[in-house]
Amino acid sequence: MVVFAGQGDPRRSLSLLWRADAPPPTRGGPGPKPRLSVDAIVAAAVALADEEGMGALSMRAVGDRLGRTAMALYTYVPGKSELLDLMYDAVYAELPTAYPESDPADWRAALTAWAGEVLEFHVRHPWVLQVSQARPVLGPHEYAGLDTLVTLLRATGLEAGVLRRLVGTLFPFVRGSAQAVADARLAAAATGSSDEEWWAARSAALLELVPDFAERFPAVSGLEAEGPVEPYPGEGTEGAEAVPYPEREARETFRVGLGVLLDGIEAARVGRT
Image 1 (cartoon, rainbow, N blue to C red):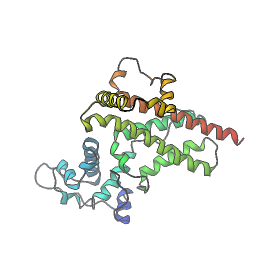
Image 2: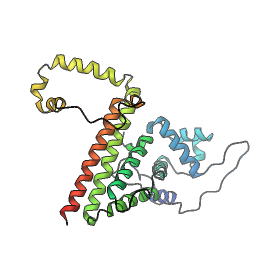
Image 3: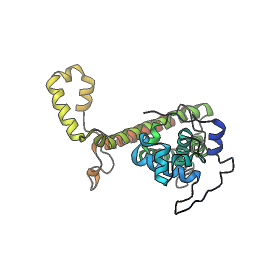
Image 4: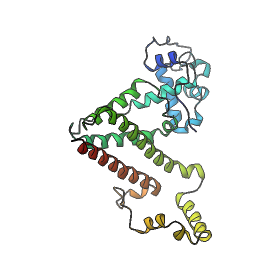
């Protein structure tokens, strides 16, 4: 399920994202019901999406969480499209906008820290991965995240044209890695079978049905036979067993892939000197 941001009225959506217009008056009512606000509605919607996924999101479901009808929400947020934009931008506020613990000159350490933060952010909010990057939300927190990455990349000394393409390389790479981790976590619950059960059943069937697998796919088979995969940090230590194998693989792939990308940036820096 892929959804596209920015489908609501442009003027209304952007005014809500940037809080450019005065908010509607807070309306109190009889009884102990909490007063509504844009922020309260967005927070309830984010909690709903975090717990139940994007498919559960509706104005009615958010209203139920707040003890209100869907109609009561429309005074503050015009509809689901605008709400999705607000949710997306709101969670981006969780990402750091600076990495003071890193040496400003150590661009590699800073980018490694940034990538780790962005990965975990998407794992916390897997519904964000369903929002297409084809059309940005254009909200303040989304721009802050972009500004942070550009600032970190500027420390490499590479020209602006290259930096633009690196933004377009690094961010999708981290999102793709987060998708692999999120999918690994959701697979068992969504399918009703554990990873061990799934692989055991299909591996046995594959070997039986394709006995010449190694001869037909020598590159893949050779790669598997050439040696052990580097362990994920912490593997073999107490608590490592709590992380399922597919997630460990996804995280290790992220670590190695990020290292190769950063090696490429270093090579580009050396090549221009």
